[in-house]
Length: 227
Image (cartoon, rainbow, N blue to C red; front, side, top):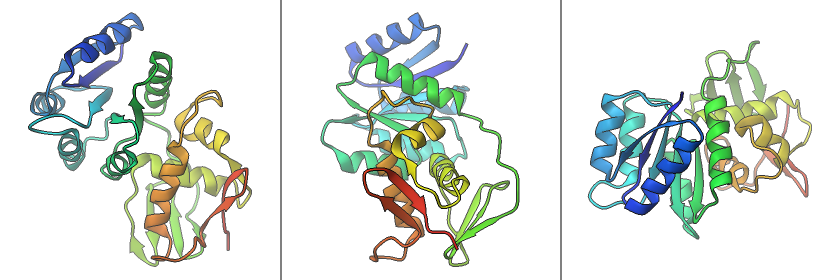
């Protein structure tokens, strides 16, 4: 039985989440503010954290940052407000694995939770380091260098980059990337791929220039410029 921590200050939503998750067989702990959530995440072991970003006193951003600074790689799914694109990006930069926008459907939430739990501990890919442009990827160590400088990536950013590496320069559709990296089928609509690609480009492309390493294939998806 997977243990899930729900950190949500809206009482009705928190209890609704717990009821739905318990029906699906999960063990659920609730925290109604950021301080309580951070304390539980520090003192207990969870398989997944569902974290609201907008909370009084200690907001979700600071909770997320504190968890990741401890070296805790527990999958974290953040809840964001509709239209707050900057919150999604900031959350992903701080180490969140995925996000759901309020209001959300229960089936979508469950699909994302199941996918994150399935992929929580992926086997590291084997093989030698791979170079494209000025980027070197070490699949065993899950490390990346850009221009000779170590460039830390969030877990899902690395998984996404490696999915493109494995395509060996061929175009990979957004649907395929969603399935490969997050485990979602094509029926789950999301801008998760595009948001993570934007973060990869921010870290791996020359500042302010058009992309030269991670290229957009119009009406298809993305590919790497090899060589």
